[in-house]
Image (tube, helix red, strand yellow):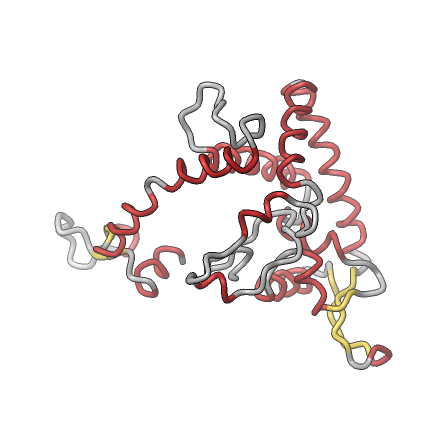
Length: 250
């Protein structure tokens, strides 16, 4: 899907049979992916961004935070290091849970048995409307959530946890705590304490009112992002749709 969109939709990639392949009709899986002129230009633009952003984070948060210069011997960009930690946490969670962490940490987390207005979910979760719609569609099909109209509330569309959804919410909270305890045993309380303390200094409560990270969400006046309403809160787990953008297709 990503290759198709990057090629047919946005023109960054060219996908075609390999000239060295002598078969009459090579299967698409054997085709070659190359950057187009626009793709090469994008590579040129993107290449220095990791170090530029790290410098900005160091200036914004100080050298004592994870955005500082101490990488403990690693040459990987900060974004790669953070993504590896998140991936490891996700794998640990999904070995214990039948439900994806992205769905548990965002939508399942904020629902209850009585029902939450669907139109309130973007503000509660930090996801855009598309992310909410996609999440509810999956959760409803799998029986974790019921979505319907409440006549008593003026025909408001509500999303509520089902008998299967409530245990999933409890399991999410339990699994997160268990993984943190396991990581303390694996990596040491001091290392985990330092990681938590430094990340809390960046994220804090995760809302526009109390999170230093929101300083990085100010859009350039002439950019497309300036036309998008600023989110009220940060997602508890990143979810990016096929349209790209943050958070989830914005």
